[in-house]
Image (cartoon, rainbow, N blue to C red; front, side, top):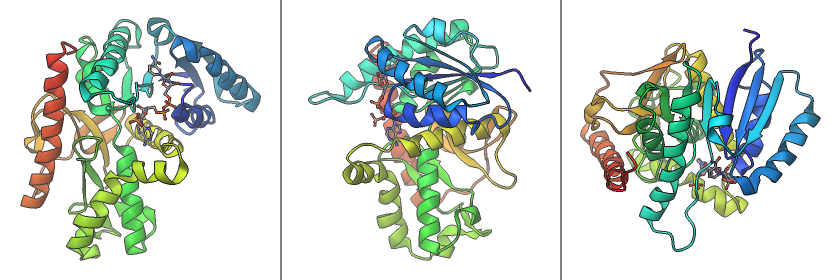
Length: 327
Ligand code: NDP
């Protein structure tokens, strides 16, 4: 298609935005299809965002059909086909968890309502800003006219991290790793699952053959990778988060690979005993802008307890935002 795909990015002047926008504009998402960027920021960040737009101009990207910026969600989201919700309120010093949920609740209720009102009929909404699963739940709950399936939260970075760790452990190239799954919440309780993953077509847990590594090295390394990067780099992982945001959106719109699946946090209808109505990460295949959860995987006791723990955290977050009247 030569009609530009209209893509909204929130928090566009932030760190992730600084990496994300240039990759979007260079065609990493849409290939040859032009893209129109709609960039939302809070008012004090608009000046910085103007600077980013100057740099976008200076790249003379052939596929960038236009850029609009603003601080009003209803204006910026008008007619968008894809909304990447990256901007969120980070936890500040002395901030309680409920303060964090409340601050983000205000952002994601407003954005859900605005999308409901003005987004294109085919809109897809991907949430990167943390706490991503619950932010997505809040936006979804405030957009009653948009099908619930159009919302997802990002666990693709965790998924990619898990692939990278498994490849390093087994000496296989990342292209040999398939069927990786992140279950649950994009948080320290997430469960990266090697029992269904494959290395060159063979079961990954068997290929590794080291339950101690799996439990005590692999899982915590994947779950705590963000903190390790902050420690090493002095600031949070932004380029890899941007890259995963694009991977997730690209596969959602254009389809996952044959014989493989991806991890996406999507609304549960009770699959794998995950409580209905929370936004939890599952193994999913995607095609033509729709996802479907891979069903029928056998879940052993170890995986069961991990999935139960991470989904219990999501239920708690849901109860907290329900208590705050956000959903
Ligand atoms: P980043 O661009 O680094 O991060 C944005 C969000 O992505 C944060 O919630 C962050 O979570 C989350 N995130 C998800 N995965 C990762 C990851 N692997 N590494 C790091 N972050 C990850 O934040 P900045 O503070 O640089 O930028 C945020 C921007 O959003 C600011 O410019 C702010 O003005 C804007 N904003 C815009 C809003 C709007 O458009 N209405 C509303 C609120 C903010 P975590 O905090 O846990 O690291």
